[in-house]
Every structure is written in structure tokens, then in C-alpha cells.
Length: 226
Image 1: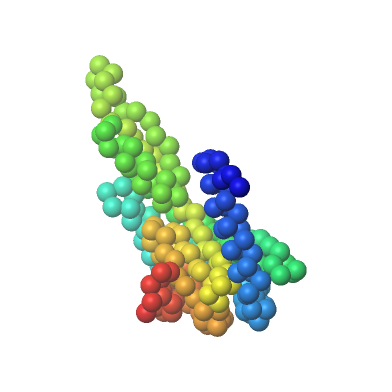
Image 2: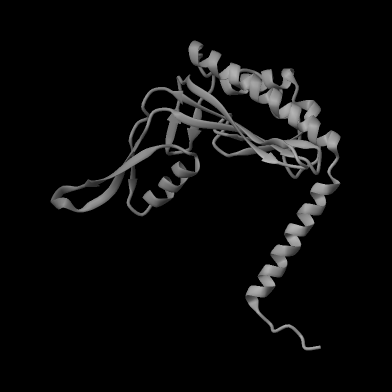
């Protein structure tokens, strides 16, 4: 019997087929109890933040924290402006379950001072602003005789923030990702479902508001054990 011809495309397809088959086998082996437990917890999280965002939007509380992007921007005297919570569902073991729940909210405050940077440094600063999900515009600042020496970066007031909850049905946990919540760098936690009860969610709202909170110590970072 002749061997199959060597093909880079076929090798890729074989690898993808093996990956899909492995994923399907994992899904078949998932515990029904784990799926139901995580799905119930994500539903409770959605309900909690659906009400919390509506209340915070009415109250518009002050945020007791500054956000600083070193040598670029400083956000202070912020207030909660708008918030909403969205979800997506996915089919799993002949039922629809939560694929994720995401809380989006925005903070508003004074306009940060314009940033004047040398042309050669401008791309670096722009990348830092983009990574931090900060809106900005840029224009050239010309010296006498029209020679462009630097860029002026105008930073929009306010911040866009995100909290995402993803179920990990294999490891019986919920992955919580914070973006622009207590810092600009994203932070990812690995929570057991039972650790995300109402008291923990209250702590998370306190993180949003910049108040003292134990939330950041309630679970290990994703990929690290305690």
C-alpha cells in the first residue's frame, strides 16, 4: 500500500482534526454537575451586574483612585458614567450555557493635558495609549520654518473599562479578566465558582469605585497557584 503524499496543507488539516476530536472528547467527559454549577453562577453574576450598573449609572459615584500612564497621562477626579452587562451563550452537551459574561463601563473626568513628544517617540506613546484602551488624536507641532519636530497627542477624557467572566468547564472554575479596573495592565484571576458569591461581587464593585477591597486577594492569578 502506497504512503500518502507529503503535504503541508494535509499536515495542518490532520493537526486541526486531532484538536477538534480531542475537544469533543473533553466535552463528552465533562461533568453535568460542573456545567450546571458554573452556568448558574454566571447567570447570577449577570443578574448582579445588570442591576449594579443601572444603580451606579443613576448615582454616578466618584472613583477614589487615580489612573496614571507614566510620563503620558493622568486621570483623576473620575466618576462612574455608564455601564452595561452583556453575555453570549453556547451549545454544550445538548443545552445552551453561558459562554461568557462581560461588564462594560465608562468613567468620565477632566480632560488630561496634551502630551508633546518627539516624533521618534510618538509611535511608542501611541502604542501605550492603544494598549490601555485610551482614546486619543494626534497632530504635528511645527517649529519656525515649518520643520516638524514633535507631535501633540490629545487624550480624550474618561476611560473605557471591562470585566469579563469566562467559564472553564474542564477545571471547574471561572476566569475573571479586569481591564482598566484598578490599573491599565489586564489582570486575570482563576476563581472557583463558589468563591464568586455575592460578597465577592460586592468586593469587585468596591474595586471599581477605588474603595478598600479584598477582591484582588480572593483568587490566584491565572496560571499561578497560591
